[in-house]
Picture 1 (cartoon, rainbow, N blue to C red):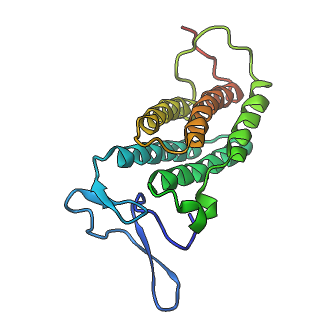
Picture 2: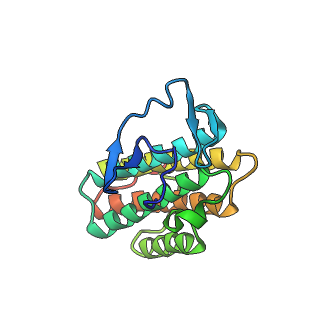
Picture 3: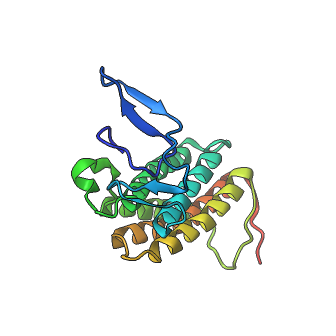
Length: 201
């Protein structure tokens, strides 16, 4: 999210010493009373809907990290790393109600190209998968099962974002909607490549 400034959504604060080298401080004590700071330095309850929304995005990111802890093909692992980086950008935008983030940290901003990348990956992976004729049950390999969980967390995060008022950039909603589709396809692709049969409903 750039070196200029980090949003409060992270579990750590980046500070700088006199030599400008980066120091990671794990605890800050600023949230001990149950509130937290957004990117514009306004303080809100940790139960605030905006904090809840980017917390769901953070959980999704963690699930994708679990997927990468299992053996998966390098092309899929690389795609997931890209998604994890995107999710940091989603979280940063959600943590910035003033919508001034783009001026400070351009890498932390979702654009149409990010959505297009997801769609292209869906199209590519579907070419190697058998056509879907029935609903399937979540399961399969460890990585495939974790991707199914990630898909449901993504949908929950999307619902939280949709429910925010005022609603954030519609592009964030479009990204999350497309991402949940991709995670379903990724789960199928991982299981297919691992030789794990799908269980139909």
